[in-house]
Length: 164
Image 1 (cartoon, rainbow, N blue to C red):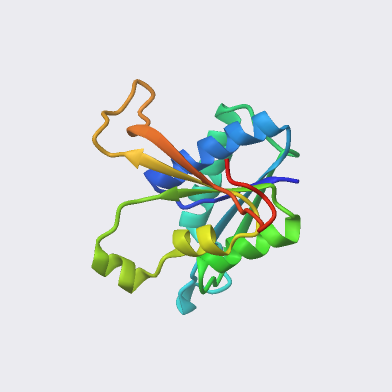
Image 2 (image 1 turned 60 degrees about the vertical axis):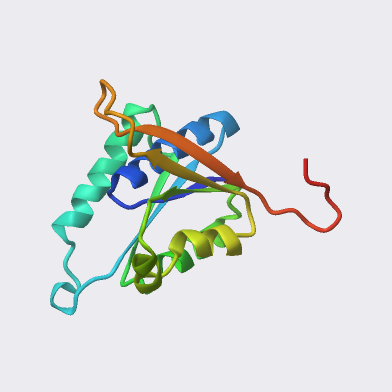
């Protein structure tokens, strides 16, 4: 059962990707990277430079951490309506062991306008979710990585299990 990470090319997305690679190593499993994009009508059918740059970035980060194919699978979902749906669908399809997502701070208005992909994944996932949050107050480290990383793990518990 693979580890799945929802990737966006942001500081939070990169932190989630790095943590997902660590989880793959701990669990001795493969990584599936899911990234969604909406393609404007004028670009439909053309592979966009931003997509190619994101794929190169994912491969570079994973290679830096010692993860390459066949342990790495990248799924780019074009014309996505809701990224949370894409992550949840791939997790279900692949019987993912864990979903890793990055969290960012948003204003109340931003939450209402943009929706809550992270919240949807946390609430609707049938497997455990590991949420990675960056401490924006922490300085850059020597490698240029932003801040300190905090993680929050959320697991599904059925009615017959006790929470410890």
